[in-house]
Image (cartoon, helix red, strand yellow):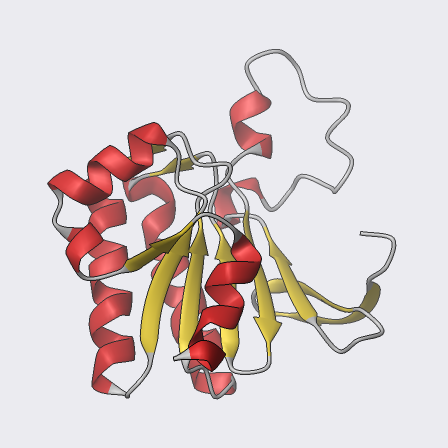
Length: 165
């Protein structure tokens, strides 16, 4: 995070820009907004609070969403709202869902992914995912999303692939 400079506060949380122009949106779900960035004082059992964050990156027309440890009905409402705002404020042509930290996803998560897929498809864009673990890959396969969303092993492949097609 040291390479990023705080740019502004927004309804989504803090917006950071690095020298190359990449923007990062740091946000904690509203129920956890009272937490500061320093989570070292959390008690045992509070570990879940540290893992409920969505981090957003805008790289040109690509929106990267770093998914939390658990994607469920508790945080999917926030994801819907936040992506709607980001897509409205920026000309997003591609959404990349980064599942590198995700261990659990329920049907609400599938619904959000399907909604973003439909929204991007209707506007001529696309939605893809990357770095899905075994559990998440299984959920995507059973939910039929592997047929709709292209998957990638690395974040950079997912971000840069559009230019190759």
